[in-house]
Length: 129
Image (tube, rainbow, N blue to C red; front, side):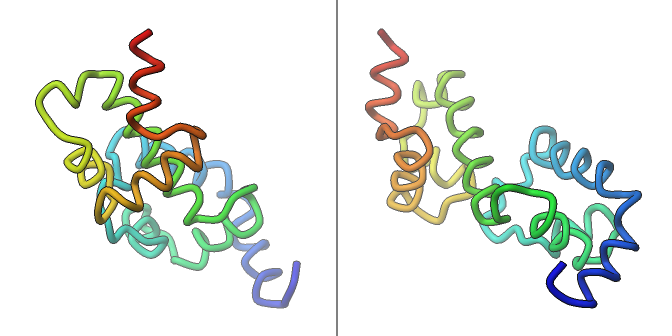
């Protein structure tokens, strides 16, 4: 723990951490919260009816990645599922980017390539083989 505030948060959250993790995962997989471009840790805390500091603490001490990385990974996972479900049969890559919570295609493309090491087009071609 880096400071007294974090130590106090540890005491307040220690018995709830596993349920927080489960609830955040549920928000991601069932409610697709990261499709909202502006979703924040505060928004997640509000949905879970807990203080924002508890969600910040969760990502700071109980996650191997930051909240931003988690959000990006979740969005790319969502995009992959949509791709594999035929999203592009009737929509564009730009639409896919917006649907999964990215502000435009460029950040989506960069994040997709960072996570999968392939561009969205390359990924799709590889999946079609």
